[in-house]
Length: 223
Length: 223
DNA sequence: ATGAGCTTGTGACTGAATTCTCAAAGTCAC
DNA sequence: GTGACTTTGAGAATTCAGTCACAAGCTCAT
Image (spheres, each protein chain N blue to C red):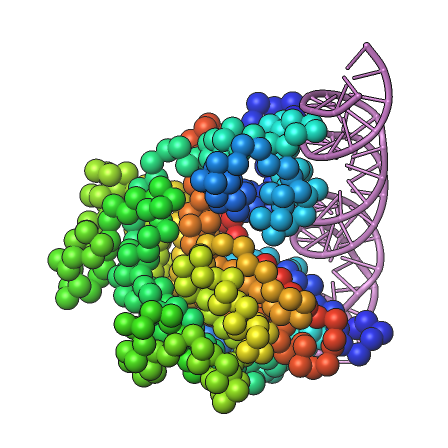
């Protein structure tokens, strides 16, 4: 309840909201009416105090002595995450990873509609994939105009990633998820997140290394 | 330089080491001999003070007035990340994502050797993929014994993920990377990291939502 | 060998995130 | 209605991460 109109939600909280969202969806499916921070925390793999603090940034949606109304909280979290809006997604690069993403059921299941597949390789263009035709890179701008791309996914080799990012930004895309193992830069006002599979393995390798080195107090859950 | 034998490296630093590692590899390829924190920071997309602090946790490997010796630093970072050791990787679940991961060149390129592919679906068992035969789940223990699985990748549906994690842990795997969109739990002493594609999109959606809502000061780089 | 010019390493500071704690506010049995 | 019990919300305390600022240490020209 800050004085200004919109509440400021800490970044760490934002990154946990989708986990609560998923837990709430499950509870909703199971027709559970109310949930305590304690049990929600257990489902989300965090502690109860964190759940309460996180949710308190959205507003006072709980009832003391009772817990949170699942349906109501689900609705509020969903609204906060902007999931009530349609968010068309474009995938650039339909190699191994890009095709897997195109066919990934989890996106559709969570309301992200894929509206465009692009690849610079002419031999892939025209190919059908997940109900869409793979188009050349320069079609990005057209699709952005017609369907309005909310999120662009970069699944091209590292060497092409920055160029693709520039293309997306130029086409008006303001949210980018980068799978290429390279640092790319975008102008102010564009959100950029990255997923690097090799980095995750390397981090795991670090902790394993530490355990092997005989430091006994190294343990679990490096998230 | 803490009094105890092993230095304690902050989690945030650990998660950046692989990025420095990648940058150093590139510099090494380009036969650059020394690098300043300033330029390394630029490559890694962070600021120079952070690079210096991060590297100082590994030891004093720089030379004032000069910078860091690329080859030497590369070696040290690599050792710290445990990349000098062989880290056999097993992939459980060869659906869209699992097969993409099996064929992903980035793993091999960074020294992670895939030694096993597993799937519970009998129609997939026996299939060849990336030079390996897909085997049933109960072969995990055998492969772990023979090849020694350092890291297990879970790429099965959410409903199977916890079961697979239990199998991996039972087989002695102490590092797990989970791609299934579900919270799984592992005993103390096992490292667990997760990659959830839908969650990344939802986080991007949050910031986009915020920008649309007319809060103008929302910008870039939510990593 | 001396001084100008870099660049590291780190202690001090600032800010963010997490955890602790408990008053406040609700339910429910009787 | 009262008291026992539950659970939230949020201030306080703590821990962790990031930034600043500068002395220390190195190179190189002269």
